[in-house]
Length: 339
Ligand code: FA5
Image (cartoon, rainbow, N blue to C red):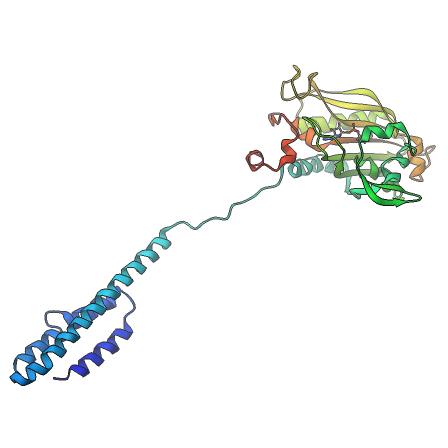
């Protein structure tokens, strides 16, 4: 009896198994009732006593080795198969989806309202010269009106003609830049980030404004009022109330501020609005001096402009119920995930 050959045959077969079915076939072939090992024991009985003494222990050894290998492999394979079954049936891990920030959503909505009227969306520098932020808007250097803008100045950046560099405190800094492009008529929608040294329940240091500028022959105040009503109806719906109040800006004459009835208290007066009305922005007829800075003849052309805060405009949308503008600036996921 050739124990060595039997061992070689087992070793060859062993190389070919890859799953539990192969392993079972191998087990039956060698350890089954009529398997190779059982047959070898039957043959052993026919041998002489001295041969039995020599071959018997070798055969026992081989049997133990085969049992040990099969047992070990069986444990490994069942673990692996269990794992692969487990992974196949588990739903995949989906990467978390983000969404646009509320302010970006508001910007997109506002653009859609103005699109049908042929407004051209533009953007101008967020860091600009004093000339565009103030001087060309009829606010000479050292003029007290500038104080209202609580401006951030950029240290060490100054030009003799253009003045100091500032973080644009309002999108009105785009008015004269647009005029200097030299293309008339103008229907500009300038949306940009502004900065002011302010923070409280309805002010943040970094906020957005949208600025409309229309310049053409024969533009008058009824066009401005009509456009403001159009925006309010389309953005807020017909049930909301808006009003304009006389105001003073150096770059428009006459000037107004535009309010909407507060959506948080429905006009009763609350911590946010105090009076039942929320100021959304300013507006007015472009001052002739500003047209001149833009190289436009005020005898031939007239225009109107308006500049509103995007965050406040969005907060006042029916049902939004955001009671503190600082939430829009905080990047707190618990707040942002709601929109
Ligand atoms: C202006 O900025 C003018 N440039 C608006 C204008 C444009 C008038 C064109 C005439 C013609 P005012 O400082 O009032 O105006 O700001 C306009 C709006 O911007 C405010 O009503 C408010 O909605 C928003 N706003 C201003 N400061 C802040 C702030 N710190 N945080 C959040 N929103 C602000």
